[in-house]
Image 1: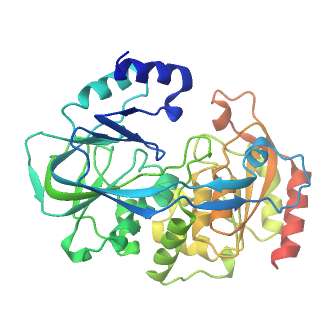
Image 2: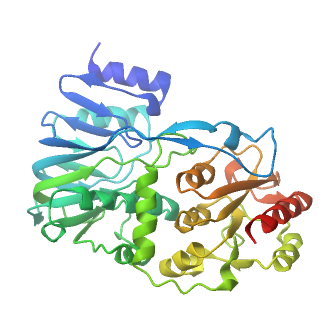
Image 3: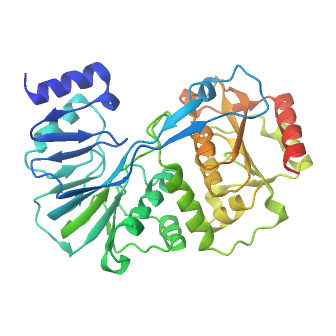
Length: 391
């Protein structure tokens, strides 16, 4: 049986996340997003760190039994090894993200004979005609970089590689590969400036290719769809927080000590009985914010100064990674198993708790996107408990 046949058979049996290949001309390493190194392998591979382990604990109000997004992740968690790969004399072009399927996998494997590297998501190194050029580059990449939460936790953390390489930053072209048609959005550029980084070259799927004599590519460790392993590094996330906060002048005030992150204008995971909880928010001095209406700097300022951050599950809660000594209270469905916020809170050493909500069964959205109905008594209990704790 050929390598391709074995690969497709294993994919069909075990799913994409458990796929492993070992053959003389193929090397596949699982780092959340797969990296395929073929025929001409990397010139060098630097290990940034070995497997990191951390504890995921729940020390909140509720005694249990806890919902699946809590109970399924309690205990030791593992980050996994992290590498940087170095390639010489290659072209880089963006590749639109395909839908995962057996047919897609066959095509990608068939392309390996003429490719030098493909991560299966949004860039490929091949032998296309060159348009742009760089002597020395670091490629920063992510499948879902336009998703705010993934940008903060997956993309910005890759920039730490630049400070860890034994090369002067001024000698490196920082290259971003984005699956979006128009490259980086204004809020992404703003966040990079706040981190002290400026992209030298931005590649989108319709842009020119880039020839580079020398390129470093960090392995990409994303937040998986269900919030399970692999995880980003806690040290990387804390580095992002420290760097971001160091490069801004915080102008937060007492108005934003308690914030409620609203999703009422998003079209999914809205609070159906928001009119009922609004008086509670006013009673307990919560400021309602809509992150989509704020600049990146305004968001970092607000979250970094907050004591309590509350809202329905969503990307807006991910900004809690910028907070210190805060408590994150997530409004979430009992049946929803995504534990991003729970795990990330443990990673960056902030407290976490939850309020279980009913989902709106009349909604046409998928289960994870349905609107929520908050249990008012449960919400009161949680707020009273934490207001006594943080004040």
